[in-house]
Amino acid sequence: MKKFLFILFILICAPAFASVAEGDAAYAAGNFTDALKQYENALASEPGSAYLYYNIGNTYFKLDELGRATAYYAKAFAINPRDADIRYNLNFALSKSGQTLVPDGMPPALHKAFFIMSGAELKGLFFILLWLLCLAFAFYIFKRKGKRVVFTLAFAAVFVLCWYLAHYFAVDGMDAVTVAQVTQLRSGPEDTFEVTATLPEGYFVGLKDKKDDWVLAVNYKDGNMRGWAKKSNFISIRGL
Image (tube, rainbow, N blue to C red):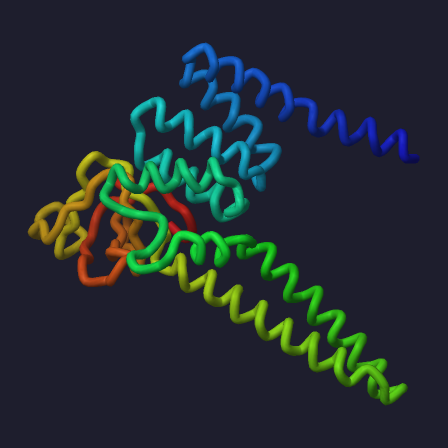
């Protein structure tokens, strides 16, 4: 049975491995369009791979598509925020559009500590702690022992939940990235409305509404800059 499962695993993963190898070879040779195609083929089989998102980001950067590069670096960072290369490249890409990964006034070491775990990892850890808490509480009810363990697990679960929520709100409003060299924000969802602001390529925005092919984009930093633009001006991070 184990041999059968191993063979099945190889058959499923082999195409992805081959695409990654071909993508790496094409990237090394400077054939970035071919590399992108191979990495995207591999990503279809491994949609949770930070490595592939990172490689696609690198490839888009080489193709001078800053917006898409930033978006894929951000996706890689969401999966594996501990990776130093992902962090560096995302911050470098953001600097090209006048943004920074670390908020103003926050020590970089604190930002790294805050993102030592991804949102998905924190969510999983919370449910593990919740399950252990239920077991510990049941043991306490029947045996009248382990009260300290119950309180410790309860505290840990609440702490991790708060950390997860802080993660969520830290990226709130970072729904999409501009891909046009200049994105014009208008006062309404038509070309006839006046331009109220412009955004550079690679800029994060929040998305608050949509109408046909238009979306209401909001400056993720403070929400003061907002306006309507066509969907084609953005690449989704979450929710477009």
